[in-house]
Length: 113
Image (cartoon, rainbow, N blue to C red; front, top):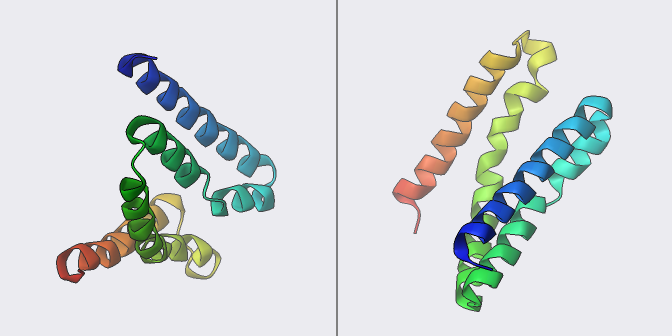
């Protein structure tokens, strides 16, 4: 499969996963949350990277960075989880979440190994 076709296939798979999770989350929030906690994107990224590179060192480096960055991205969810108590609507919660995650991830990029 040539590179352009493979890139289109990857984009379609990624889009289908995102749309499916969003649709399920709208109908059944608990199931949507479960799907969000599964490393679906990571699984797809590992498979796609392996299919392209066949390099275990690339996969290992991706896994190490993911192990660090997933916890650092968790502050994104805090404003949403606390929105009922804070009275924040979607966009303010989203903006604060992006800011919080950006600070934690940015600090790791700046001061981490």
